[in-house]
Image (cartoon, rainbow, N blue to C red; front, side, top):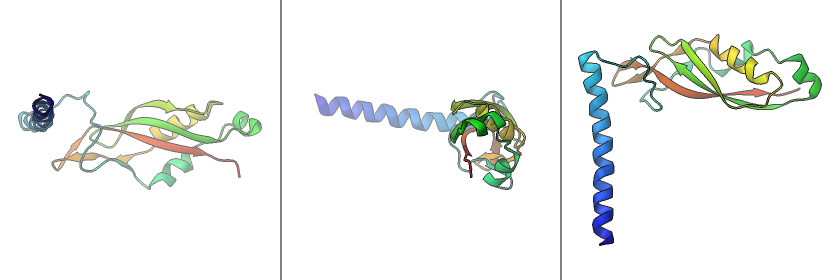
Length: 135
């Protein structure tokens, strides 16, 4: 009985995985891509042009955070469109003291290489860490 259940469960998982890929290919072939659809995982993930140092150069460490000795890493969910532009940011894990806002602002000002799936540029969401460290 248990082997039968596991076989059915495994078959359903494989079916769901294979259908999701076909659906993406069908949308691309028909030109019916949903502009609000942002994928989590693609063949080529978006990368900031100039690397993480490009983002770090744009980060302005808030004076109030410096005075308070606030340090840590802010994790920002970043939505990158097919042109490599950041369309939206969300703080996933912040450290407060205006650092969250500064990190999101620096990422929004950064251009990315677009993510790619099946050779085509696609909308992708990626989580970007921004480190705040007092030297």
